[in-house]
Length: 89
Image (cartoon, rainbow, N blue to C red; front, top):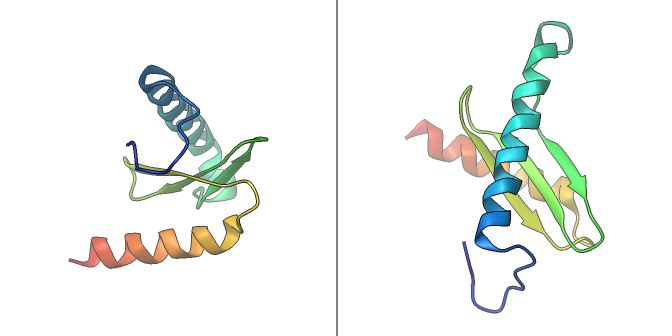
């Protein structure tokens, strides 16, 4: 989703691929859930952006990007709170 004043590093097709890869990684991590429990979040840090993935439920994943110098742990807490509030409705 394009936002005014936000630098877009990826083309629309590259963005789709990034989301696809995030889903793929999440699906792979579920193969170990019987031993480790379910994945609660993941963080990929790049030079230009930090990507955060947080499962919404068993089949949906929220993927967000933040500036690399932002506190991703605080963002994960905010995202989880929003998901919890939205899924209670």
